[in-house]
Length: 116
Length: 110
Image (cartoon, rainbow over all chains, first blue to last red; front, side):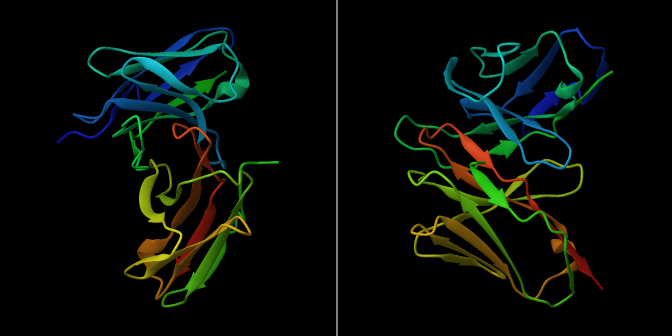
């Protein structure tokens, strides 16, 4: 079975531009989360979506937005890019019920964004 | 204060050594705890969940101390392949949010 797939794997943008990152979860997983990992740090939570609804949001500015599609794939958008947005953006899918979360996140290999 | 704090290391140990990592968390209402492993330039992968009673998986033992709000990971008989960064993960009040520590780097030397 395919794991979590993300695209693009690498991209370079300049300050002020906009970027869209894409994620396809593991088949059968309805929850998708986005994380930002800056070099030398652990992943930082950005968003979680389940059944196309936002279920959690981290401490990121409104320049960051996301959505989930009927097939459970997801996009993360970042507007007005800053140098500090340079990072590895990880998508994770998980099984999710409204009562409990199994806790295991399955990560994709990430999209490495460089902002010049 | 960060939600999860870890010693960044690196811990440099010889093969066969026993090594322990700790992490502390700030939210006393946290319910779920995990250790993830991340190899260089790769995605994080679940190593093990951490249960209140403590749990073991082969050479790995995880412990949770709710009163002191810390989690530990013990690795026995270290292998070269254990070299990686170990991330402590705690969920927030909202089950949907997972907080990662900055990671502890382990280097196992021949």
